[in-house]
Amino acid sequence: MLSKLTDSTIPKFHEKTRDEKLKVLESFSDLSEEDIKILKSEGGISFDQANNMVENAIGIMSYPLGIATNFKINGKDYLIPMVIEEPSVIAAASKAAKIARKHGGFTMEADNSYSIGQIQVVEVDVKFGTSKIMEKSEEIIILANSKSKTLSKMGKGAKTISCKEVITESGPMLVVEILIDVGDAMGANVTNTMCESVASLIEKITGGRVILKILSNYSTKRLVKGNAIFDKEELGGEDIVNNIIWAYEFAANDPYRAVTHNKGIMNGIIAVANSTGQDTRAIEAAAHAYASRHGKYTSLTKWKKNNDGNLVGEIEVPMSVGIVGGIINIHPMIKTCVKILGVKSARELSCIMGAAGLAQNLSALRALSSEGIQKGHMKLHAQNIAVSAGVPPEKISYVIAEMTREGNISVTRAKEILENL
Image 1 (spheres, rainbow, N blue to C red):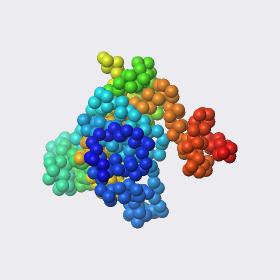
Image 2: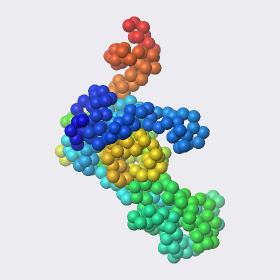
Image 3: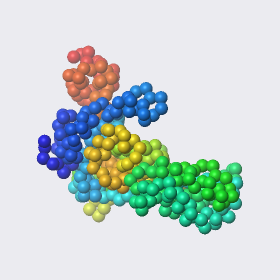
Image 4: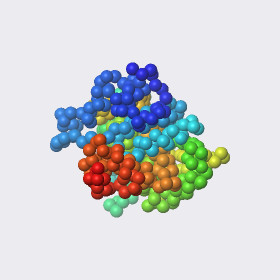
């Protein structure tokens, strides 16, 4: 076994065989023989396990699991598992992380894991109902916390109550919001349970009628934010830095560009979310809502030059994630990926995902601002094209090289090259 690795800059990691890569992970993350066995399994679960997870199960669909190297976040090195089908994402994130290391890597911070629960009250005098709810807020909090002894023992659980009026075509409604510290869980189930448990009490207090009682996935009390410095020489010089800032300004001021810009950020974030069993739909929905918080859809990142002319990237995005509960407790591959990361809290995982998003955004902007996005992307995409064309494994490298040299990457061309061979 290799001596214990602590540095995530693994030279030529992409050139290693699968077994060699697994040896690196075994050392870096103290993986067991069982962990390695799970990583070698095709998907990590049996059909029986899948059948217990979802209704009407008929099979298992697998996605590629790769490792992003070079990440240093808040002074700690990470090898980051990423699950994604798109070529170039893992390589691009690793490259950006390597550039960031020169100036200390990524500096990230995450809010406490506060979830927001909402109780909708209709047919109510909103002003009267609000005053009564605030008078009885402590009683509501006690009742909510009675539904989770675990959180209460940890000093977490429901913390505050607030009210707001929402004007609709059907009339005004009162929305009662509960702020809940859910600890290291994503928190959807406990939030929904607490909301449902206090619904009858809220009806009694307000004289209104409760309809919805559910969490909000717009997790604005659960932000992750941070920054990194990317050396101008490593990026390719002052002109590239200036071009990246121009590209960012485009995204900051045009929603058509901003959507694609933010999609690139989410490439990094969601790839990590996939590997660690997070609710990717909730993360995506919150991020895009947050990008529109000022009335116009804009960039989730900011880019500028510092006094040394180096590029500084910043990110701020809602991040509702957990490391306990749900699929994390039952999916062997996800449990192993969390072990690879070595995270000890949901906040630490948030910081990793935020850094991955910032890294991916840098790489996309750098490519767009220089040779264009397709050069590197299509080179990696060529392998998928060759496989689709039926090229046998021993001839794939030659066909890829020919297509890349010609700048003609297509199934038709791959077949032609194969026929000529």
